[in-house]
Image (cartoon, helix red, strand yellow):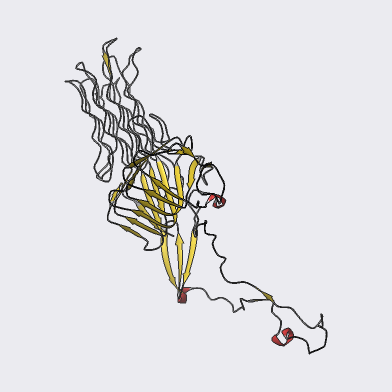
Length: 435
């Protein structure tokens, strides 16, 4: 469904959809039949005059005038001058108090706590943190209503099974709001290893030859797991990309596929988890300063397992995909970092020991490194996807191959026409919309 916004100014009408900003001059508007906007079914002017002094009004000959208030209704101070994405508009309101977060604070979207504090309440209260249904999606979201938000240096973690939405009048980040996955632990609203609509699959195995796990996908397709390429050993495949570039549904990244070991005693290596989903909507402005930013990258896939009990060694697991970042305000100024990169795939193991996990998605434009193999018979894991490039496939090996890298997620920025400025880092590339 297409959302249309109209902004009228002197001599111009701005017509914007969710995917474009079009300017139409007054001369281009269709002709409209003249009408007195202040009078509904107006009678003749002489019929509207008051009766002569001392006489009674004649109900049959005198007509009343019904005036229409053409002035716009004032917006309540805790409401938004635009439709907030992903929310039913009855739920789109700000709190009244300033919330300042510092190094080590955690926003938990499962338990609905901020720095171990619950904020129950209703519209009009200072701070409220509540679960709400998402407009247009099946995923429930955790919505934090504040008057203004400041992340004051350091790193604030966002974790839990729900995507995070923060509503405020103004938002200022001088530190990092981090909803990234950490290896097998998903970010806020991200998927667990091997889970999600873009999850990578596990590779197949023979007695000795194990295929690496496929990388998770979201905005980019993840990397394929490595394989020796025999008839009995096939790589784990990446998942399918999903969602829309405009993020009509707010959802996190998907997990990477497991690295196969073929042991009845030891478990497969786990894929990286998916990055989280974070939305900031401000009625006035969002300011991301140098040193500040939002992260929702995928986790690194685990390295291949060495099972001492039966002497078997396994392939590396796939990296998790990056998640989602959605910013919405009339003015968005960005000089920090926005990153939703994929995690690296894990390396394959050999007789010399377990191999290394892939790196978590990094807070830059760089691609996360795949895990290094051990010994002669392991294959390195593939790099994660970022603005720098697509994720890499896990490398083939003589025995145990590497896992594929996770694909990057999605970034969307919505502002008033000309309201977005950026000298900061964006990885992957952002979709920038006007409304």
